[in-house]
Image 1 (tube, rainbow, N blue to C red):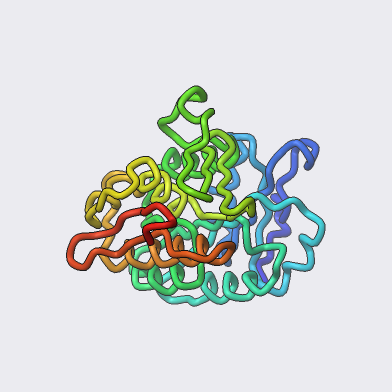
Image 2 (spheres, rainbow, N blue to C red):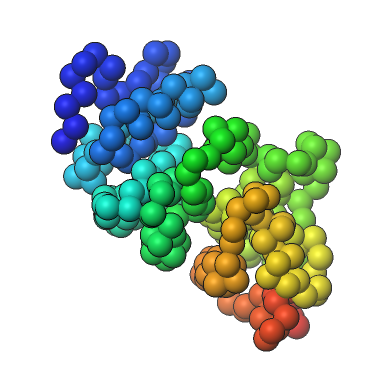
Length: 252
């Protein structure tokens, strides 16, 4: 456990908890935590340090907004912590962001398999991290006006609201991570059209971030699994050597 008895505190909470979203920071580096805390508090978030997965009971009853994982090349702490957190039903739909330190890039695929929503290689501009957090907090995706997001996008029994950041199929709500949400948004706006992996990368990932074709396939697989979990019928069509498309249910 980190000794943070210098007075900084383990739970940064300068205003009433109920009005500020709580972000857990899973890290064994107090200085790294304090740096993130400074950035996030300036954007009206509050933070708490989590330096062990066994601490999750400490946050029982908290309305947790997101968890940020500090991934280091010489440590499996972040992956191990997130793996245990995923066993807690209350933590499964929380936004998860992995910050990969130098040499930790190889953890990306493992974290993706575990269900981490987004990964960034450090150093990362604070604005990029805050963009992902603000988008989830506001419920409106970046680059869309409220007028554009007001009318839901519909394809068969699938309905997607860009304004409220909600997806339903057959009347049942589907919880998607940011990448899966962007992929679905791009596909549902162009039903039947086949998009290459490079086109999907451009639509769902920040500019300048290296994304491999395998990463696209894994996110599409997660999106497909989420869509078929609540209703029968695979809406995503795989076109070998070409890419993916979203099809009308009756044509799948």
